[in-house]
Image 1 (cartoon, rainbow, N blue to C red):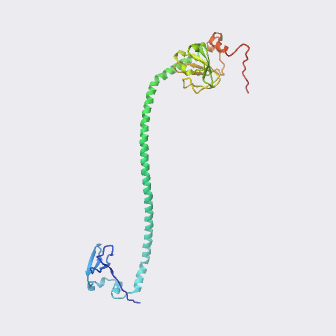
Image 2 (tube, rainbow, N blue to C red):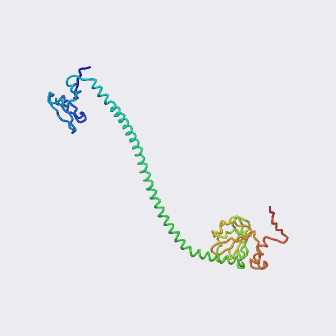
Image 3 (spheres, helix red, strand yellow):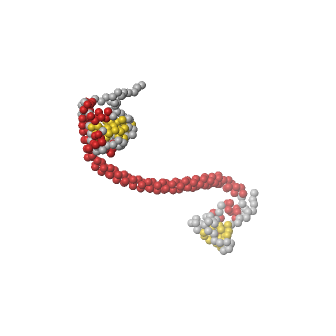
Length: 305
């Protein structure tokens, strides 16, 4: 079947640009009356002006479909066949374009996420830099504190050695013969106050209700107080004694300027010989006992379960 077809060449009212024409496509400038096309070098070239001289066109290079159009006829069967041959390619191209569009959209989304992630990381790095700077300052301060503590330890070392010597001497005294100790009075728990004072304690300036810590003096070295009651010790000027548990019968012995040492005698059997001889010669202890016992009193040891 044959039919007459009218072909209108692309036209405009100016010289076309690269955007307007494909390679080999014709464009007519109706205002300038010039025919243009685009060559393979991507240049817009002038084909001619005025009337087209078809004799300049080599008919051997023109496809039959174009020849039929020039002759004023078209073979629709051939045109349909050409479209059919390229249909799959057109469909594939359309699918590729859609897939590419999805890939571009996903990449755009990921770029947005990554941009936010980069921004968050920059903020985190800035915060970390700040913390590092702060920690560097603290480390420098700690190094200074450690140096100061080391200096204090160096200063304290002779005192520690003296303490060790004093404690050893006092331990020897206690483990051996306690004759060198003298009673200062009684010490009440859990109040941590002096309860009663002997004449010796009074001469040393100790009064009822005092804390013993204030009487940790070299002149009181060897003085001891017997504990009444039970509880946690405190105010003894010696850290190793403070916080310990005292009970009836325990002693607090002064080792001089270093404080009061707990001697745990409470509940134990005490031999009078360990205190320095016959009880009749311990006048200060007799005086203390006389304030607690009278002839005819009963000592009730209580019950046990």
